[in-house]
Image 1: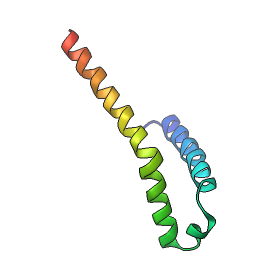
Image 2 (image 1 turned 120 degrees about the vertical axis):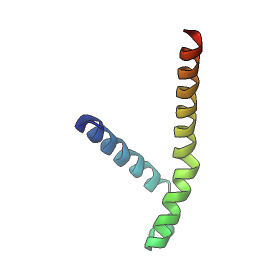
Image 3 (image 1 turned 180 degrees about the horizontal axis):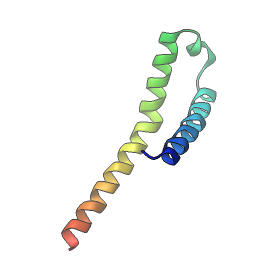
Length: 69
């Protein structure tokens, strides 16, 4: 990862974290265990499905490029 990519990633992570924090009930953020559970739940619900769809589409595009040659 280039330094520019790392910087962009960090900025996006901070933005995502802020949004997910605002969408999490405060009582879930009172212990490390609660924070871990809230983060895992939010990531599984909102972030990972989108990453999975993106990667799946990229794979399909690569396969079409390979088959189209």
